[in-house]
Image (tube, rainbow, N blue to C red; front, side, top):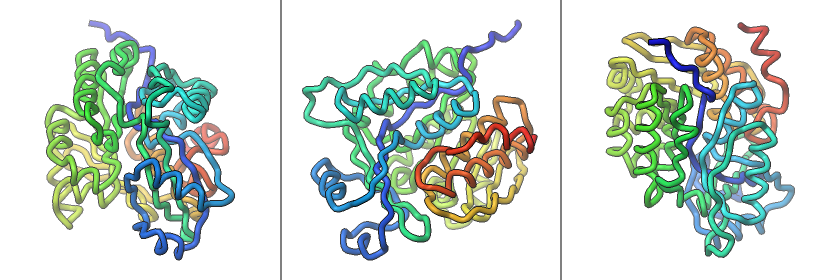
Length: 332
């Protein structure tokens, strides 16, 4: 049988979040009792309070997997996104932003009379470039099975699921539907682990999906260790390095390890002065996917991922500011 060519290459499913970015000093994190370098969930009053305390903010479309999809669209990869916003000012900005990049996006907005608002993440960037994310999920939390668009999910080479979205009343059921739609149509499934505390809350659900046939996992060192409940990365990768599962572990300035079929491929990071680490893992995934869907080998794909991550950490904001495709062509 001749395989049917899909119209889309990567479809993301995740948190539709507007990022509110701001440079801050370490003392402000202490004063507000914010743990550096992690994502913590907050309610709407807390989101409004934090926003009121900040100056010189930058508001951009965000959400981890949405950032990856945006990066892929900028690289010319046919892509779409599924994520929930409200029919309000920020929600309309969010949808317009994706459409302007050529991303397929048509998730039905939550009605304007709902009590919640479009989700946003107050991202505080300290002088070392580390980001502390304070996330109000809002409408993003109410992604439902009904939002799983078969026109996207049955017609793509890959879907990319966001681990953060394991939080939510119907989201795990929605993930299962998305998984089944894609797999039954001959596609492959990737998942971002997203956050060690998210994994701790839903470790069983993560493992259930992995055992169901996940093809690719993205995670940083802490996320991989949390998933496998060990302090030994070698042991964790050995646990995961089975069958055809591809595991990509990002190690910040130490680069990345790509693990598959009993072997590990180590790739060095692209040397860059860190201005803002927001979006580094998201754009690494975009670069890696670019290589993957274009049939490049894993080492080259990882190098492209490091190049994309290196670009985005050099400025404020989670999405590329230059034409990475030209740089990629020099590397390939």
